[in-house]
Each structure stands twice: as structure tokens, then as C-alpha cells.
Image (cartoon, rainbow, N blue to C red; front, side):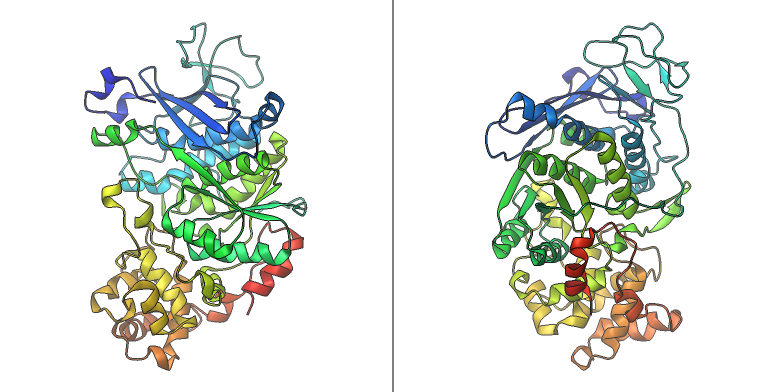
Length: 500
């Protein structure tokens, strides 16, 4: 699983690498998944997932899972691509078909918007995954285990020479958002797997699906305390997966490799899809809300969205990719009709999860030395969850959950104001839209139990007057949207739990 020592002993220069390689992948009979990648012909990496399986998998079962295994291989590559963000991608085996390529091109470009912006890259990465118009090697033999691209352009549809690796490198603009195409009806699920992240959203998703009466199990990668506690509170079967990143990632980051946010939710979704199939589930119900489709700012022709891989655009691209692969399992977000504020309202009524959940991302940091144990109470995520829950709870209840009263701590004012884009753009975090924060403040302005809280008083006096009276309208923010891919069989349960 290690990169070549001869290269890693030196300082890592991201600009020296020209291509990212998807090497090979393997699913073993015990559910072990091995995914291999490379940078140029110099560095190689291996990532592993241990997926739970009900029994040893025979060759036919592993073969039937080939499309979903390939999808996980291609999607999980973002963690290694980011080390250098080279201009090309190449494939040891067959490249992805068109709809899958469209998904990957979005994830490896728009999904890297925050990464490129915060790393001050000159432009957004835009590697090409589709087979039309790509550069390919001309008569150059493949180096051992790694495909090499040469600079000879070829036309789409020409058959490749045997044994020559495919390359992708022609830059193109990120697809612009436009009117959503008409969607085919989504089949109603029979058995549902719900990924759990340990926050309020996954708890609400669990309860929506539970109301449907469909056979349901929970899925997670790892068993961090908020995840395990949520699973115990839910009392449903749990499929626990493990992920092992190549240990060279951390070493290379220390040597100068690029680092930053990648579309990690796409990895979780792809792993959940493969796990669902191997365990007899035909649907994965994600907990991605309407607000996840909203970005923070525009840069290099795209909207930079911390939650891009949670967005409705990616959900629909994934749906097309799964249909193209002939996958026997689908994915949708059961919370898509709702805003974060509506989800917070529903969660406030789910007392059983209040001692279990933690939405603060410091708990999930890869470096144990930087990992938090509970709510840090100083990050945008902590502030937003506190603000979103406040209209539907009491100060005493939130002090019990967070250990502090964030709306009464004077130094928190600027952080709360930034949630409304006062003094800058919406933070790069899993927080709701500015309109939701404004709506929460408007709701709190009429609540006697929150009167006198110092930060809230300043938000009411200094932030609300800067916005028109119709901005942050609570009724509009709390209303459910019709723009979603939730199967009709679950919509009554969505309305029952997330409606007024």
C-alpha cells in the first residue's frame, strides 16, 4: 500500500505529475475490496474497504457486483487524485461509459471547487473521463501496471489497439447548471439501506424510512461514537464497513502534496451501494437535504459548493450512471424536499437521538491528534446546528446537548453573522443556506424564552435590518419542495415527519 520510496524521500512537487492512473480493483470472497491507483509511473497507492457480507461470496456474486465495484474504484480515487490534481486520468482497464463519465467529470471538477479555491490553484481541475476526443498513446507500449498517454489525438469511436491504456486529458468547461431534464419514474424500493453519519440528518432519514414499514438496515463506514450511538438509539440492523486509506497519503501531505476537501459523500454513497447489493438491499436512502445544492461563491465559472457531492445534480447524475451500469440497486436522498431548518424541526421531536448525535466535523478528522471528542462549539457547523434547533427547543435543552449556550457568548457573533453571509460568503461547511439562518433568527425574535441572549439580540438588531422583510421568510424556508427524486411510496412518510 505504499508509494515508491525513491520518490517520497524528496519534497513532493504536485506540478511534476501529468496523469492519475486507475489501476486495478478486486473484490474478495470475504467482502474485502482493494482499489489501486497511480500517479504517473512513479507512485502507486492501494485503498481497502472491508464490507460486511452475509456469507462468503462466490465467483458469480463477485462478477455481478463488477459495475458497482468499478464505480467505487473510480469515485474513491478522488482521495489520491487530489495529491497533485494532474490534468489527465488514465485507465488500466476499460474506461467508464458515457453516463458514468459524466458523473466522474462533475465530481473531479466541480467536486474539487473548494479544494482548488482554498489551495489557490490557477484553475479548476477538469480531467476528461469520456472516451470521445481524448489523447491517447500512439504505438507506445504500456508500462508495467500503469497506462501511459501520449499526445496523439484520436477521433471518437475508433477501436483501441489491444493492450494500450486509455487516457483522458482534453479540458472542457464544467457543465453549466440548467433546467433539470424530465426524469423517469423511480421504482419503489423493497429493502432499504440508510447510511448513518451520526448527525441530525441521518437520524431523521432513519425515521422517515422506518415509518414506511420497509425492511431497513443501517450502514456506516467506521463506528465513531456519534455513529454507534445513533445506531443504538435506532435499534435497527447495522452493516458496519471499514475503510483503510493508503498510509502514504499523510506522509505525502507533509512533503508538499496538495490537500483539502474532496467530494467524500460520493465515496460513502458508492460504498453503500456496493454493500447494499451484496446484502440483498435494492435501495440506499441518503440524508442529503435541499440546502446541499446551494454553494458559497462563484469561481472559475462554477459555483463552489462544499456539499457538491450531496447536491441534487450529483444525485441525478448518479441515477443515470447506475442505470447505464445495469445496477440492481439505486440511491436517492429521502430528505431532498426539505431545508435544514425543516429537518431541525423534525429532529427536535426525536428525543431518543438527542444524547446520541453530534454534527461537529472535528470528530471525524483523519488525524487523531486533531480529532475532537464532542461538539467543539467554535466552528460554523456547531453554530448552524445550534441556531437551526433553537426555534424548536429551549435554551436548557441546547445547553444539555452542546454543553454551552452559543447564542449567549459574545465572541460568537461574527461566526453567526457569517451564516447569513454578513461580512463574507457562506462558510465552506455543511451548513444551510443564508435564507435558513435568517429564518431561524426571525423565528427566535418572537420567542420569549430566547430573549436577552446577547448574540441573538445583536443578530436581530444588526443583521436582520440589512435584509428585506421577505428574506428569510420562515414559511417559505420550511415548506417542502417538489424538486426531488424520492420514490412516491415514501413521500407520505416524508410529509408526515418533515411537514408542519
